Amino acid sequence: MKKAAKVEIIIVGNEILTGDILDTNTNWLCKLIYGRGGSVTRVTVIPDELEVVADAVRQSVARKIDILFTSGGLGPTSDDLTLEAVALGTNRETVLHEEALELVRQQYDHFFERGIMKQGGLNPARQKMACLPLGGEPLVNPVGTAPGVLLRVDKTTIISVPGVPSELKGIIEQSLQTFLNEVFGDGEAMSRCVGVMCNDESQLEPVLVQIVEKYPEIYTKSLATTLGENPEMNIIMTISGIGEKQPLLDTAFEELCNGLTGLGFPITLK
Amino acid sequence: MKKAAKVEIIIVGNEILTGDILDTNTNWLCKLIYGRGGSVTRVTVIPDELEVVADAVRQSVARKIDILFTSGGLGPTSDDLTLEAVALGTNRETVLHEEALELVRQQYDHFFERGIMKQGGLNPARQKMACLPLGGEPLVNPVGTAPGVLLRVDKTTIISVPGVPSELKGIIEQSLQTFLNEVFGDGEAMSRCVGVMCNDESQLEPVLVQIVEKYPEIYTKSLATTLGENPEMNIIMTISGIGEKQPLLDTAFEELCNGLTGLGFPITLK
Image 1 (cartoon, rainbow over the protein chains, first blue to last red):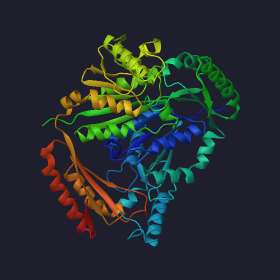
Image 2 (cartoon, rainbow over the protein chains, first blue to last red; image 1 turned 30 degrees about the horizontal axis):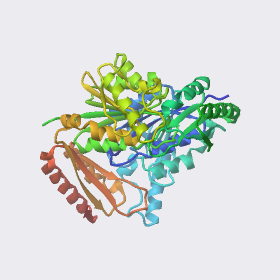
Image 3 (cartoon, rainbow over the protein chains, first blue to last red; image 1 turned 90 degrees about the vertical axis):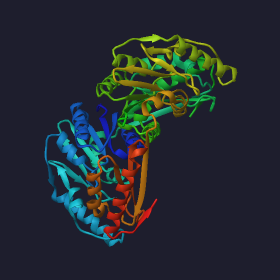
Image 4 (tube, one colour; image 1 turned 180 degrees about the horizontal axis):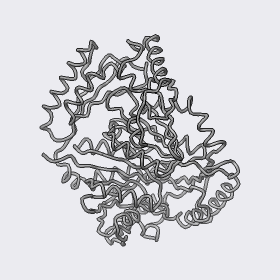
């Protein structure tokens, strides 16, 4: 069986760190990766600073992960420096990429023709978005003007996408499916959920610890919420991989349910 | 003038990395810190794995930041191992803390008396929440059962709080104000915002780059959104520090507005 691909995410953006913007890209990406049988092992949020981003990229690549997503910092303004940082962190130059330049030009012309922008064509700020780390391939952005970039470095494929959520999603859904299919194949996450009439994790612990030890491959989690809000607690069991793991999940889930009822708490399958 | 305190955040939780839960604690903390004149320089999201969390703590402390927040992994179940990891990452043991134990006992008794829980008092899983890294001080949790922990290590104060948002907020708002006042004093973030009738960052770039170079202390950001959704773009200028920075912000903001109207785009003060 294929090993679950390891993925890291670097979110670049001062506006996240000041609290101006709530980052939802991480959650969207995590759902996507986990749902396809992969595993997000780290997310790092850092400011738009060349050396900081370059260093984070360097460290992720050194951990030999399969995919590194970077989100943010691909736009035309001078504080958008993610591509330069990816280049610096992987010891290469940025170069003007003709195909990327054509994509940028086409998008500005397209937005000009639709009356969304007052000026088509290129200018220095727009051209900057087509300067890719050497060896990078542009990914069509169906929503905005900055192409995404796919760059293979050692064992890691670095995917750089804009931080505007619609652009990130647009590029991944439209331009990255072939790559994702290559990496994840028919992987998927399977989960089962049970509600137990007990809001006290400390009483469920003996059963949970037994299940976690016996089935380390399965992610078993009691979802704690504010006490007093709901007398019922949900416990979710998830396994990420390919379909053949279903029987293992079923067995473990049955044991969990038996263990919980054995403690005397009513359960509800969800 | 006091230097802006540097803050890092470590979010511990598999449930964030699988996408089951959208992390909102980061945004809440970033707003709090930035609003009080501090600067969040890094956020790291990692799984509930002892060595991974310990290593992240070690690296944050090595960067000599002022405050490290850890969120998550303080509960009674065996996958909650943040305190053990903080201890490991700062080369110390965990010890049963009598005052913390009393807080835990009181909370369970309290929830029992209110009919929210079926059992008061202590058990091994509950006792675990009172095992603090040596030298740590418990912080009263007004909402749940796990106390927060404040631990001073070298130049860094590590604040560990639960991941349930209401508990994180409860501890910080109720039990951490004295500490925050010590660190931040009367610091605050000030901001000004202008809307410009141009959705094309590449055309605004000449003005933005000039402002950013002239006023490096001020964070100037054009907030890009999905193209075509709104013909107007907001540009926000923020400075974090104490009140005496207001005149600098006013001057820079006036220059920004003059620059934008100079390009021929109508503006709206916000």
